[in-house]
Structure formats: C-alpha cells, structure tokens
Amino acid sequence: MTPKQLRKALDRIRITDGRGFRLRDHDPADTGEPIVGQADEPALLADGVARLSELQELLYAQHSWSLLCVFQAWMPPARTAPSST
Image (cartoon, rainbow, N blue to C red; front, top):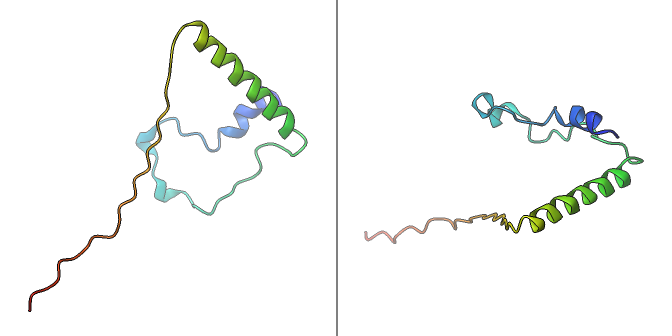
C-alpha cells in the first residue's frame, strides 16, 4: 500500500478540525471497513517500524528527548454520609 493510498483510507477517521466534531454523531459500535487487506498488513507494519526507527535516530542525533505521558483516572463511586434520622 502506497502512502497516498493509506492516507486516503485513513481520511475516513481523521479529525482535522475539532470545532465541528461531536462524538455523539458517531456510532461507537462502528468498526468500519478494514483499512488494509491482510496481505498488506505485514509490509505496512514493517514500514511503520522502520519509519519509527528513523525518527528515533533523528531524535537521538539531535540530542533531544521526548516523553509521552498517558494518565487515566478512575474515580470510585462517591460515598454518602450516613443519615442521622
């Protein structure tokens, strides 16, 4: 799959302007069509890994560091005070 074909396939799920995006307008059960065929998956994965390796080398060569932090919070159910009746 060429980069142009991949870009076209991903356009269906890409959000370019958040002002018009509403999550409620999208079906959470939508699995969509497969973006790539099973025959193309290994080659696409290998290309992605190679690209990631190139970008990591670029960051290393620039003596730059980057850090991605993903936080997920869980809030337990609120406790209610016992009623004094």
